Amino acid sequence: MLLTGAETERTNPMKARITAFSHALRGGLTLLRTQPHARFHAVTALIVLGLGGYFHVSRMEWALLVFAVGIVWIAEAINTAIEFLADEVSIEWRERIKHAKDIAAFAVLVAAISAAVVGGVVFIPHLLTR
Image 1 (cartoon, one colour):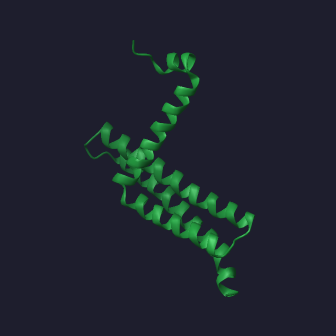
Image 2 (cartoon, rainbow, N blue to C red; image 1 turned 90 degrees about the vertical axis):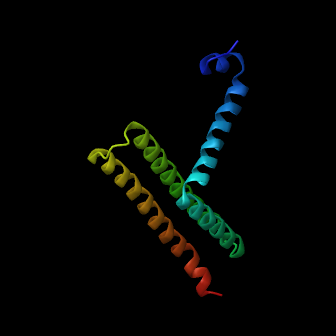
Image 3 (cartoon, rainbow, N blue to C red; image 1 turned 180 degrees about the horizontal axis):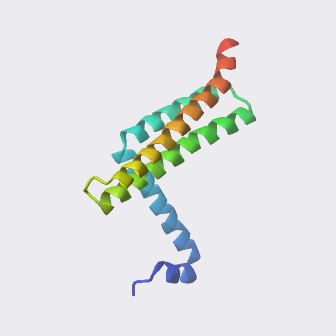
């Protein structure tokens, strides 16, 4: 017998959580496989985390860096989801779909610029003292 999501939740809540987690991870892999900018963000995130370790940044600086990296990933994921959904809804050019895609892309741009500013605020003092 095939159970719906709600039935699985009632019969085995732990399995439902694991299933939901696996769907989310699959989304992350799809993001990395299909989006060149996501791969750039991944490399940048690794560099930021490496620099944080190298400079022994404070807990507050770690919090700022992790938050900034997370915001970029969230924006990139939402942007990609909007693009996939918009492309599924219509293959024809539509002005409102173009606006939705442009606005989602702008959100990623703002997040990336903000993260770069946070990175500068955190790392420039460490670079100047070396």
